[in-house]
Length: 482
Image 1 (tube, rainbow, N blue to C red):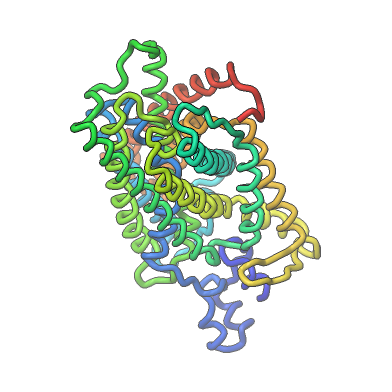
Image 2 (tube, rainbow, N blue to C red; image 1 turned 45 degrees about the vertical axis):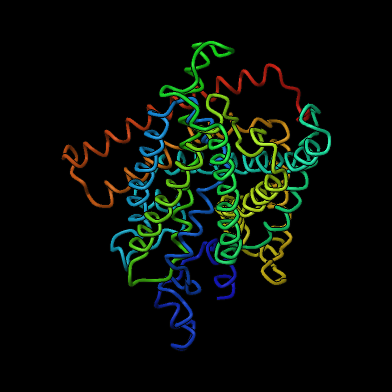
């Protein structure tokens, strides 16, 4: 039983309940195990909500003022509410797919891909795997960029305070990316989700800290102007903005908003930390999703709208590092420190599924290898030569790619656009139809398919906008010069 106890969320072997009771030898030992033979899960409504809020209120919140500036006072908030509703609705569908069959006693699916495999199977599993893991790698790169921008902003805020706002205060983000990478290598040695619940709580508190500071500064700026800036239709065509750019930026804004809400790809992994029924994990997860999406939407509306009210069409693509605000510089520093701490935690929440996937594959391929299986426990860390080598290599690769592509807004928009339709809408809808046997051609089936097709069109449009911007940025960019 030792390997099963070691791996928590990331273990590949599921043991039938009968085997467990025989192997455990007594009821006392069996009481420490769940129905699948794994160590008893202890997650609750509150820990699940904290995990979701940590995953959702990420760096995406800081680009929302820019997104609303592209769309204006009417379309901006409307788009945010629509994305919130779609995210919440499809997340409730996905939560139903954690267990195959009966919602309380059916076979558990430990990961998003497991759920796709048991409900849809075939080529869709491969498609899901490619999209999900590519998206998670993309998020890791995006978070590395965002954290380095915040660390650089702390240095620049001090420089502006000392030398005045005319000094360009230029510096490279490369050393900060390396520092972030070193910290992530250390934290990535914690083996799985169950053991990083405290990191999620800290990260959730940090995300509220920096979002609140951004919101407060936006309100203060708006009050000092004596009113709201901005217009009903957003950035106007004219001074420095062509009609083509306006279209691309409007589409990219949809991608930014989609990215700000993305967490479906780790929902099943979070659900797998919730303690056994009653109530069923899906009911707990749906409640946690409702609280989390409602909380983040209120926050997003406030941060995005107050940022736009404060800066109007000139809203920067990162509210706390684009130097819309210069003072009080110490408050900006606190906000940017909170962003970095939050991103350290969020990076782990998003990367655990990739780590677990590769380690399960390796353990299945070479079950007797000491290189893979031998572990040394040091507090929350479980050190094995393979884990140390592979996870460190992963962090190094994402850090180097981040150094090559340091444009935060474009990367965020592209990630949001590419992953939104397949992971947030298509797979949850298809799995729910299969699991609940929704009759083809029925009203419910037609509504679900209409939702899916509409979101596909939005995803394609938003991706086109972000790609156009990345191409523009690459024309004038030199690698490692960020």
